[in-house]
Length: 129
Ligand code: HEC
Image (cartoon, rainbow, N blue to C red):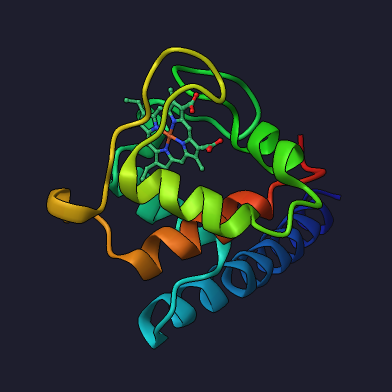
């Protein structure tokens, strides 16, 4: 009985390890390969850029939840450009009186293609609220 249980536990652990490896590897491979458009790479970029000090996926912090941004601009053909520009130039007034800091231009924290990728990532939060 005990050994049978151990066998089951061993198989479960094995299956879990295979699953975890399968989940982890595509992100790692893509992050190394080039344009970082997958969730894991975008999450690290957002973390490294300090975005998550003010934003969360599903609830308001200093700034609006990313899911709320995605919902607001859903169906707006200019959504990606609007969000990209907000990230690069900073923004205030759409969500309240607290300004979103600029990351592009003379700040040079993010390049336009990175801002675009973050905008795409945020728009992908739609329906995940
Ligand atoms: C100091 C806090 C702060 C940081 C850091 C911050 N944001 Fe914001 N963000 C805000 C606030 C506040 C708003 C709402 C601005 C407004 O009302 O127009 C906002 C708005 C936004 C919007 C929506 C703009 C719009 O036009 O509706 C996006 C997209 C966004 N932030 C992405 C990011 C990303 C990506 C980062 C990191 C690169 C980031 N933010 C970092 C506070 C912040």
